[in-house]
Length: 455
Image (cartoon, rainbow, N blue to C red):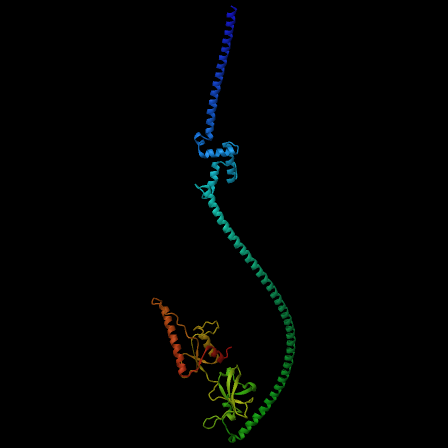
C-alpha cells in the first residue's frame, strides 16, 4: 500500500512537473510567438522606413554599392555619408551647406544663359568668358599703362614748355623793362629836343617877323619909287612915242624856271608842278634867259644849253633828270624852261573804260569807274566817251568779266546782262587795239594816280 502510495505520489509529482513544464513551454511559446510577431512588425516597419532612403532594387545597383563601400570606409552610414558629401558639395558650389537641390537649381538657373545646361558646361562658359575678360582687362591695363606713360611724357613736355615760357616771359619782361627805360630816355630827350626846337622856332619866327616888317617897309618904299618911275616912264613914253620899239615878248615863250639843283644826282628842280599839268616824262629845254630862247624868223628855236626830263611831279614843283648839257654851260638856278608844245592852259581829254578798284578793296568793279572820272575832272581834265583824234589819254582798268553763258531757260534779264557784258568786253578790246594803232597813250589805274598826284 505504501508502495502504491509512493508510486502514485511520484507520478503525481511527475505529472505536476510536466504540467508546469508544459505550461511554461506554452507561456514561453506564446511569448516567443508574440516577440516573433513584434520582430516581424518591426522588420516590416524598418524595411518600410529603409525604402524611404533606398529600395531593395537600388541597393543592388553598382553606384549604391560603391557609395556604401565609401561610407563603410569612412565608418559612416550611407545616409550620413551622403548627407555630409552633399553638404560639402553645396558648400563648394554655392557657399552654403544648407542649400537644397531645388535652391541649387534656382541659383544655377539664375545665371544668365544657363537654362537647361549642365553645370560643367556653365562653368566652362564662365571660364571662357572670364578668360576673355581677363584678356580684355590685361589689354585695358596695357592701354592704361601706355596712357599713363603718354600722360607722363605730356606732363614732362608741358613742364619743359612751362619752363621755356617762364624763361621767355622773363626775357620779354627784361626786354620790356629795357624798352621802357629806353622809351623814357627817348621821351625825355624828345621833350628836351621839342623845347629846344620850339625855342628855335620862336626865335626864327620872331626873326622872320622882324624881317617881314623890314621887307614890308622896303616894299612900301619900292612901291613908292616904282610909282614915281612909272609916272616918269609914262611921261617919257608920251614924249618919245614915235621912237619906242615894240619887240616880241620873249617872256611869253618861257614855261618855267630852274629853282634848285642836286649836282651829285644830276637833278634839277623846276617851278612847274601838278597844278601846271606837268606829266612824268615831259622834257624842257634850258636857256639862260628868255631872249636866248627866242626863235628865228622861220620859227626855229636855238639849241638849248641843256635838256631836262621830269621824273617826279609835286603840287607846285617837280624834279627833273638832267638828260644832257653843253660843256661849259652848266644848268644854274634861274635858267628858264621852254617846251614848244607844252601849254598849261590846255584841257586834256581822257577816255576812261574798264573795271577799277578805287576803294582799294582788291575787287575791281565797273561802278568804281566814276571815281576815276571824278579824279580826272578834279585835276582839270575832260572825260569823253569815245576815242577820236583829239583824245590825249586812254585810261584802262581791268578787263570786264563775262561769266558763264546763261541757260536757254534763264530769265530775260540774265540774258540781257550777259549780252551787255559781252559787248563791254568787245568794246574794251577794240579800244585797246585802236589806241595802240593810233599811238594814244594808255594809262593804267596806278599811272593815272601818278599823273593827277593821288598818293
